[in-house]
Every structure is written in structure tokens, then in C-alpha cells.
Image (cartoon, rainbow, N blue to C red; front, side):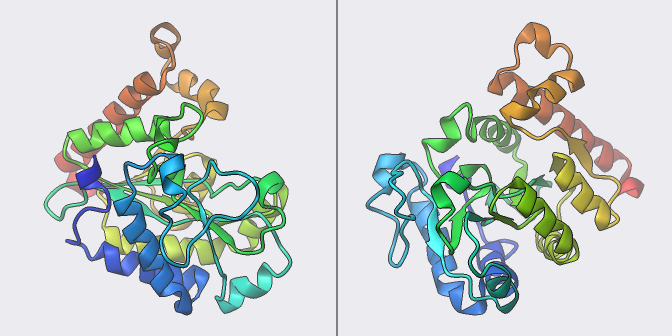
Length: 281
């Protein structure tokens, strides 16, 4: 999987996605540090939490909150809109999009998650963006944690094994404060977020958008895309909804591996359907 992470630049993503984050979210003067973050994520892909601690890269450090079990770093928010909006705010989350095995010649799947949740307990006093990646798949420890990124990572592995490209992003680009505050803010910025997501879609040109959770579904419907695949969010909190969608998991057990099998099978079948019926694209 390491060789497929942020792999080629066939679609120009390694340049264009950092530019999009800088221009639309963090501020144009943050471009160099965003580019640096992508380089470090590639270099540190197989690093554990402990190994990450001395290898965050120049100008990048985690928030000093007493928690060493993190690979997130803080970045200044200098974008004129968000800088003003987040003045005196804390627990500001931002996940930079990541991708695996993206090729021009192969189908591409855009996995759209909900939002970059951050803990108010740990980051309530931090007024910079706490930057990670969707489901934390850039670090070895988190992507193997059952309550972390394991379910999504198992899904991505199955899709990559079939030579599909996978791009991961969030529907709501920022998380701020707590669930109530963040949801209210996202509602005010829904058109802004939708425009950023539209730009990502134009860059990635996905064969299929897969929405994980209701917020992602709402975002993609806002863009008028009706042929996306809408699935329960991949988290422990959504396990009931997952089992309801795939009842045989009651017998098989709803492990990360079995859930990933079900999701990948449905996603691949949907892509085959699109290939056989190009008019529905």
C-alpha cells in the first residue's frame, strides 16, 4: 500500500490539491507548509505514533496538549474568511485529502466522509487548525486501530487490490469547537464547502462518489449528483446501521474485515453497473 499512497501525479493532484487547500481554506501563504505536509506523510507512511514524534518536518509540530499519541500538526489559518470566523475559537479540525493508486487509466472512487472531528478536551485552547487526514490513514498506528481508521483502511486495501484508485476527503471541510457549534457553522458555509467539493470532483474526475454518512450525502446531493452511492459512515457509532444494511453480518460478525468485504463488493458492483450502462454516469 505504501507505493500507492499519494502515488503518481497523473492527474496533477500532488500539486493541485495543496493549492486548493491553500486558496480555499488555510490561506495562500500556507502553501509551502501544506506541500511539506504531503511530503512528510509519504516519508512517514509506515511510522508508528512514537516514530512520528521526531519526524514532523520543518515548521510542523503537534499541539502541546500532553498527548503524544498524535500525528496531527497545527497550521495557521490566514485565509481572510476563516481567519475572521475562527477568531478566539478552538478545536479547529482540518483533514487534507489523501489518495491511493490514482491512475488515469483506471476507475477512481471518491470516498467522502463527514467532517474532521477534533476533541474539545485536547484542542479547545488551540486556535490554529489541527491538521490530519481523513480517517488518519497516513500513519501506521491509527489505520490499524479498530476504533480508528481500520475499517476504512481495510476497505481501501480491497479496492486498491482490484486496481481501483481511491481518493478520500471530507464533506464539511472544517470542524470547530464541538458537534453543535460545528454543525451550525457548516450549515452557514454549506455553499462554500459544496464549491470546494465540486472543485475536488473536477480534479479527480471520479467514476463513482461514495458518501459515508448523512452529511456527505447531503453535500453531494447539493451538487445535483444523484448517481452516487450512499452508505453508512464507517465508525463504531454506525455499526447498527451497517448491520441493518448487511444483515448477514449478524452471523459473520461485524468485524472491520467483514464490513470492508461488504462495502467493497457493493462499490465494485456499482462501478461495473456504471461501465455497463454509461448513460447513468
